[in-house]
Structure formats: structure tokens, C-alpha cells
Image: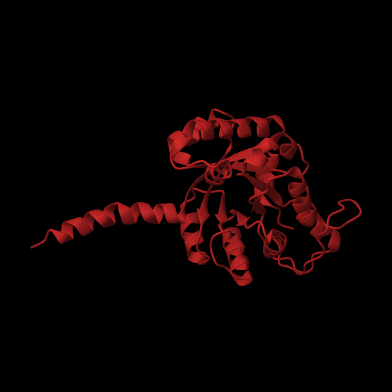
Length: 264
């Protein structure tokens, strides 16, 4: 039975680099994976449209390149999407908008196998799981389910108020700071509170590491990666598909447009 690559990396105290994908077109994942630059790929289901077939194909494409997979899910329908994504073969779930430890515990219960040992609510889903297992026995499924990596966005004032307790909850594997939502929850604009944001982000990282939870950071450059590396961070999410496209469209493409407009 193939194991969860991202879980194996976390348990071996390794490092990861990933990028975020908006499109469900498998060739985009193939193109990015062919560079050898990434350990796993995150599908932004919180923002992008998708079908269950899309989820299977995304996870399957990651597997073809020996890469892990993560899906970022909305808060309101998180139980349904997370269970379906796990059954489709996703190796990690990134949950958004949680504010309290009680919400975190409820989410973990819903994606934990319903066995006497585990006490969760997730039954046998008859899905493909990682690398397709048509004859997966019930307890083998439960073991694979346990390997699912659970990550949480810390992006509300209330979540930061409870960050110590959230990071002490068994089953929380990774946390990530979300500055935009955090500022909204404080009634701030990000541009007006850069130092406050930096301080809260660093506090989250410090607390997470103290509790054995891995902090994950979104970055846009090597310099940012080195800054967080020196704080003890080992998991880096660099750019996303839209960032890269917008940089090209607003860069070289715009330069060529200006040049063309000057042609007599």
C-alpha cells in the first residue's frame, strides 16, 4: 500500500516546497512537477471551481510524479469536501476560517476514522485513496485515513487569541498565518499594519514550534524563505499560478503592448 508522502516527510522532520494551483487541468500540475522544484501541490478549492472527477485527476497527476497533494477547502462545506478529497487521493487538507479550538476539534473528528480506537466520524468511503486501492480492507483504510495531514489557516483574531490551545490539540499537523483575513478581522488594512502583522505571524510560528506543530509560510522570494528558515520554518509555499501569470501579464506583456502602441 502506497503511503502518504507528505506525512512521511513530516514524520522524518524533513522540509517541503510547494506551489498553489488554481486550475484543475492535469497538464498544469505535470508542467510544474516536471521542473523537480516541488514536493507537493496545493489545489485552491476555496477559490476555484471543480468537480469530483477533477479532484481525482489532480491527486492522480501528483502521484505520477511522486509528489504529494493538498487541498484548501472552504469553511462552510469543509466536512463534505475534505472527506471527498481524501477519498479521491489527496494527502493533506488545509482548513480555512477556524476561530476557536472547538471548531478545530469538530473538524478533526469529522475526518478521523470511525473506529473504536480513533473515535471519529469518517466511515468507509469506497474511494480510490492514494494510488488506487480497490481491495482496501477496512482497517487498512483506517490506517491510510490516519496518515492524512491536517493543516489549519490561522487567519482570524479569535484564532490568534487561542493559538496556544489550537496548537496543543492532537491531530493538528501544520498551521499557516493568513494576513489578509486576519487584518479584516481586526478592522485593519494590511498596508497600515505591516509591523503588527509581522509580529503576529512570528508569534504564531514560535507557538507552533513550541508545541511540535509545523508552521507553513507563503513566500514570494528566496530572501523571504531564508528569513523564515532562520526562525525554524521548514515548509515553504512559493507563489501560485495566478501570481505567476499576473507577473507575466503585467511585466513583459505590458512592455510589448506599450512598444506596439508607439509603432507608427
